[in-house]
Length: 297
Image 1 (tube, rainbow, N blue to C red):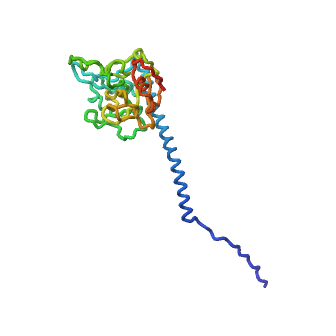
Image 2 (tube, rainbow, N blue to C red):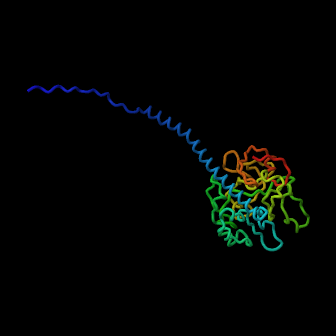
């Protein structure tokens, strides 16, 4: 019987895996790629949040325009901020007055504008969060106030512009105590469009609608006086304080957006105001009749 032919043995080179050094090199390369990609991802997310913030301001600006279209004035910045001769201060905000034009008619109907903002039925209604009043880039997680008077009221991250404050801008002081709180705290040329207890008409904005800021982002947010129901959420920019600076008298314009803050003008356009904006231009944009030359972005 013939012997079977001999089978040829195929030779195989031994398989070779990653060495430790090669593995570490791969991990290092992946780490570098992630470190390069992460800022781009974060920047894209912030750009999206900033866009949503701008849309919030746009909606508020359009609401103010529609309010003016029906009432022939903008809403007062605060109803009942000036001490009355009789009764109590109401502290009802411009935000509350704009609710019907922000698709919040039902919430507006729950409010009683003859009662203070920190009392029923206003305070329970104000616990409802209104997304258009909240900037998505805000770092603080709190959405409602824990202060004694407005405890439970939902926040806003935007403030109506009262004007520009600082040396030489205060209203004339009267020696008559009955007149101490009878008017605005700033002289007329330093006032903005959302002031105490006085509705401002478009004809009063002689600096120009497209040159005058109506609403802007608040630097200090999610704290007392930042509740959307609270009429004290109007603010005046200190005349020597830039955007995003913490050296002002109190709350100023600012935001968590890198490089500046957003604002909506009286004509409804939204602009990003840079931290490097010339202070004289910024101040001019925050007053309605200061007769300053300003070129708004």
